[in-house]
Image (cartoon, rainbow, N blue to C red; front, side, top):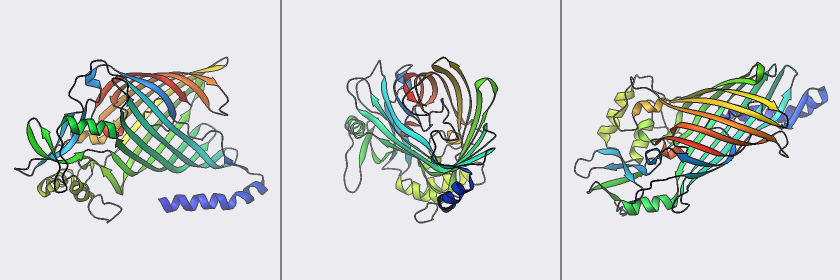
Length: 382
């Protein structure tokens, strides 16, 4: 897939002089990409600065999930331990996200347009209580192509990368609160008064996945879109419990369950049991989402409303070792957004004041296990 995208890019670059000479429309860097980022998709490639206000402490990431093993039995488990010893009654967070989506080497045949698609973002969340510790940092990028027909139907396809990282300050507080001890031979942590071997906090990684997006602009300012993401058969996937059966890693081309399980110090029996649970099943780590948008021009501004629904197949694992159940519901997320977009000195882009309601995963990849209900408000570039 990477080779195919590279060949396509080289072909477009090499044919640019011919396209220009032939009179066919050609743009090196388009003002706006053919596929517009959905306004309510929490994983969209956008830039924003906002405040997150969870409904209560239960909707806030007050714990970090770690992979530990019992020194007596050798069995591993995922446990959630508190970040700090003191309770927080009124949490809020500052969210800063820097991202963009670009259309490169656009070719315009009139009724059909095509371009390379390059997108990415860095997303971070800071605590807004008792200090400004950084909870974590996410990185995401996309490389592919987009095709648009009749100025209303757009298809985008390519490779998508997700990677989550915890903040250093948060980990320092977390380890101190839970009496973690780090030794060259084995690290330990206190779990309900018992010393357990510590593999480390669980992490969320998808490197790389196929991502296909479809968008249709309708009458009266309406738009519908849908996206499907599927990890490649040879890729990096974390945590261990999210790895499908039959996948391999790009480095040594060996079994991925065995490789990721080894990095999390999962016992051989548990790795074999996890593989047996998923062998022959439909589990592939899919992520699906779709939504609707409506926009209307009001003098010098545009009113935009959107609704997005996500479905994560990894929810069938319950995010616990040995808990995959094909009959379990996929984990869902719901996000509703309303925005006022102002024309500004951003070229074809707009600056918007937005507010949203989110019922789903906390907006940091490594906190995928933290369900939240929250309100957000801030500024965003569209």
